[in-house]
Image (cartoon, rainbow, N blue to C red; front, top):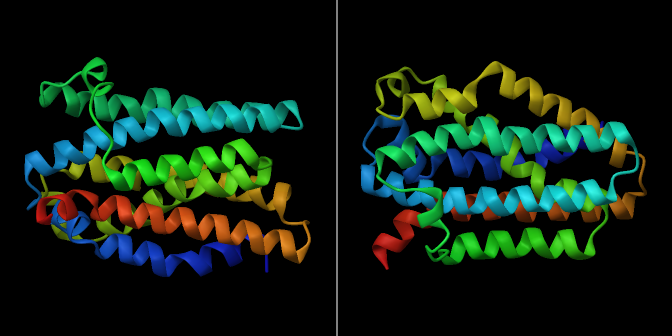
Length: 219
């Protein structure tokens, strides 16, 4: 079994929990309040800024020019395509990137970012890759599931759902899985098990992130 196929099978139950999270389901059904979506969007924008910084560390560890170009491609997506979606929403909310710089991180977001930086600081290229991929891959998995449900098209958040359910995004995810197979698949069983643990930890941090806003409301 290819390395990433095993990794994905192991983590799909976690991603199914993400899909089933009340916040995600309310987004699909259009029941999510604008206030709660705004809080998520602000925290996610802060996360993405730091997520992009971790890719800078991955570029430092890159072994070939092609690898550097691949990392730049995801950086372009994060800073251009993905940021456009968020900036449009932030403008609707009357919030700017400059204002976000002064907003405190919620604990779940802080934990996730701290984990990414810890791996980036002490890890190698494969370990960094396993830390960052769950964010990208799980979004494709979750939002394609949402898009398959007819009621999601009636949601006021359909444009957001559709953006991550896009076929081009899914193809990009497949390309990154192929890259991870080539880069990490030939490592020893011990190393691959360690990488699997990093990927799983990041997937659970994704789950915490989806539960973050509603958890704050209950506190």
